[in-house]
Length: 546
Image 1 (spheres, one colour):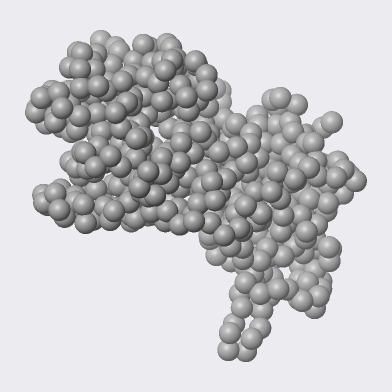
Image 2 (tube, rainbow, N blue to C red):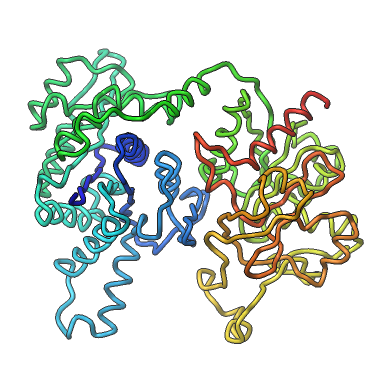
């Protein structure tokens, strides 16, 4: 079958849920037996999110191949359970960097390089690459931003040309828009959507389907008005009413008939009954009454909760199956520094468990160390991920191994470097201090590791060998392995390629686990990650005094 292309644009305002809509549609099409891939086309000039502040942009999501991506890629993977690649997140920065690099290499033969055709062709190449692998049936590409944004114009022109290249029978445009409700007159207003569609038409794109975000149920009159004035079929005006959980959206859109309209318009999987039993079961468990449990999340970017989106979702996936409702106590790690032990305990708030997620830079490290110490001494379930694992090991090194100056060399201070840059090339050693942050050596992507038999982690994983996604620069320094092991710290997971430590645990603790890798990226709503489940199980026992 010839690959079909679906493009999702947004209008009126940002934050309408284009990414969730694209992810939900991917789930519905996959449930009909189609091989799908999602893609994000982002207009910002940054080459990737690696240099963007988590407090502004949210988390960096890491794919199997090690690419640093927008958090929407996480939505796609969680909803569709399809592992994506670097081609799934393309920015204007990447596009222009590639075009300029090709121009510098003389690949354009000395011709004048222009937005049309060169930049546009570069965007189209990235779209086609996604559809060219693994016999993909449908590519769903979300265009970031809103229609009318100056920076988004090249992407709109590119998708217009794609529709011409592949034929309109193989291409579909979905426009996500807002239907504001005015309380005073008690009316849903359609004019913003009409103007948004008019703007889209000015770029030569006629939407086939409208997905209308609304807090009130649309009447038949409203649907008919939108269909008439936006030149779409009545059954192609889809209601996206506010949901209590994002995981309700696939079933909401299925009930609205979105996937059936898409399949009919593209002549694919028509009449196929979707297999959504697992999703229906998930929603039933989500809606059931659940036992609240407090987890203190100690981090550097707590002012924007999206900075830890995958961690929050991974906990929710496991919590649903356990009948728990996780209540997050947000603790800014810096606020645990320079205060008494009693104040640390007060700010941590008597949690059933403590989790310290990833991050970078020295700010707030000492606060993380204080939190890890409290969890260890008070026997509170502890889960450290990335930088959280590093600070947990540093705490043990200082207070149990007698290495009072222990730290990571990322702390930018003279210390016993428990964590350090490993396997540096001679070139890197010479100019390490002069390298741009984005050019520093990085371990990123999926790597295998061996799990020690008899360990807690072996019981959690239920196997001798596993693979997880990494995203870190520093490794546990082998020079300190012996004194750390003497404290009882168990290096239970060893990277199969590098021989470096991938995870640690304390056997004499109810649950004290640190992972240099990031298990949150592979947790799925219908397939929760075993580590998060084990952490919450231990937290539940602690809350009951067991």
